[in-house]
Length: 133
Image (cartoon, rainbow, N blue to C red; front, top):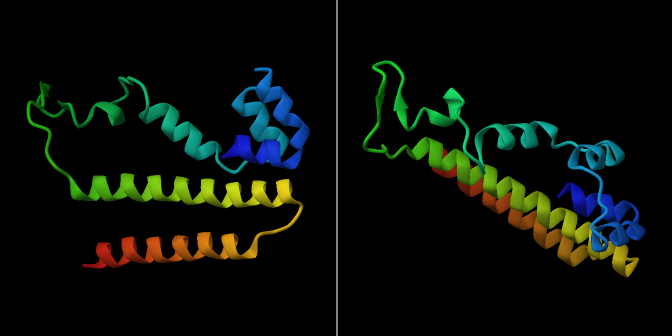
């Protein structure tokens, strides 16, 4: 998401990507005044790679008794939380994609922007309704 923003704010930066000269994610975030540091930190600590942190291992090890959990319990609340986070990331990505298209075409595509906003509204209403049940 931040990479799209970085390129959208200065379309000439696409050359950096094509030539594999992009700055680090942290530098990109600084240049665009990124809002996702907390999300990046959380994902770096708990997802996409092996972590031995207690938070990442809690579903594998019962720390109270010092044993491996041989059966992974289904936890609907955790699943819903993970799916809601995924939804939020996809919506942010879609919004930034609309912004990029608008820069590329030098015109805001109101119909596309409104569709993404409608999807966002309906999707989160669905999650919130399911949570209330």
